[in-house]
Length: 245
Image (cartoon, rainbow, N blue to C red; front, side, top):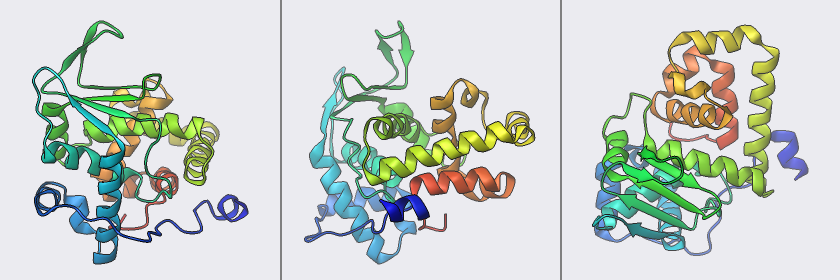
């Protein structure tokens, strides 16, 4: 932990006694429809595959309103979670036990309106509209990605509840980012007025972080060029040191 607090990164991230492998069909889905995987070198693709198999085995996937959960659904949703936590040592996002998928936007009893996605920490359930999830993957440079957004909420809450190494780095780095913006009003004002982050980001700290993650993953070069200090803090939060980030 002393090393973690000094350098804000885990001593090691990947160590597996026996690597797990995807089926041929599952690997085809990953290679065809998840570009991040193809940006990794051979060693890291092996790590990603192991984590993906482990994550899928750890969660219950439930279709709603007649939606059929198949390999494509499980692989692409799980790959989004594995991507976000690829720099973590503990990548399971333990606060999630079930992932519920609707074919389209669904009616939420929480606030009596239609949602594209939501996370219920009390029940440990992440809920997604497949139509909108896929749209977020298919358009990869508009900084709108439902899967990244909702998984970020879960990771954020998980980091508050847990004190493992990766949760500590994530929560402490976000605290540093908030302090940076608090003490640099000109930077905060530039963020607000730039138009780069959509207005929804400034609803509260949870939405702010979720939108930051969407922009970090989808347009990293633009993010780094315009807001290098903020980009560096997000990169530190995720321990993202691969795939040219």
